[in-house]
Length: 274
Image (cartoon, rainbow, N blue to C red; front, side, top):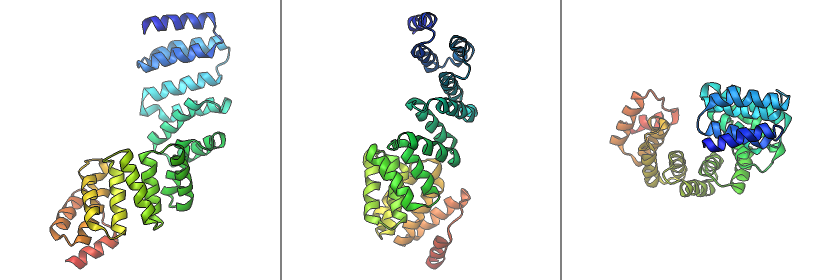
């Protein structure tokens, strides 16, 4: 690595206008976590060599640097990367970094704006289509979300996209196809908790409580953040359908401890069981 850095430093001095060398030099430093070298050496030298502090590559490298510094810098990193794209939209790696930041920030407005902007440049971009689908699914705009999610899967099938399409189709009461995509998600990523939960919900909607309970239990046993709330509610629903009074009592205790509110429809079923 040290030899590579020495060669790249020499290359930037001999050909300061060649953007490839600045990019490679910053990549080497960032890959080994040396953000200070990029911030205090590479960027100032590059700005001086290019005679332009507003060059797209300056913004791109600054954005990657800020992203590397951690979550406290993500919003600033996103803005820097968007500045780079405003000067040169044909930067696939920069677009991917922006979408990565959107997913980390969990800001629907950012996600929608950036996914829409990328889709104008590359309409078939798998991740951008997936993110637009998730935004629309969150709004319960089901046919529109379905369209984007199908495009994403057609380009590059992922467990996350298949799972979200399964949930979208479930809400549209298209249970057979919903089940197919939930199972496809689990083929791509076995034991994926959200897909196990989605499949359980689909099976419950279809009156298949036994298999639904098995999948719901697997989701609960994943010990993820949702295993004390959302997944427990799905398992509660399955146990209510099965008439499992002891299971229902156990679920209610866990849900009470996690201070999870019970939907009115489930509460009505609980009252009827009592």
